[in-house]
Image (tube, rainbow, N blue to C red; front, side, top):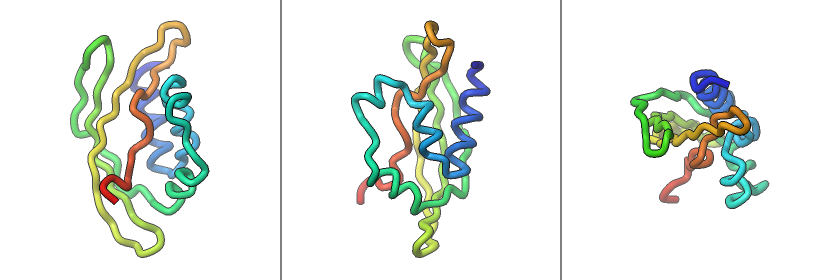
Length: 112
């Protein structure tokens, strides 16, 4: 899969609230080391993504690609909105011909 297709599919999953689908695009090694819990998935169901914009994309070390992302988030319970930044790091796996996100899903609850 081409890089543009991978990041489009991932961003669409995030924008539409398909966090389980987005999780499948996270590097299998990361998923193994940081398994997502049912509680974490329930927390994702409590928010709505209102904005998802690529601010900057650049090449990183060892063939990785870094994307700085602006994300708007609405809390479904009280309708409050806030924004956050998130840095995606992608790597290409030649064996599977797949781009993998190596940093996990966005943490919308930083500092809570």
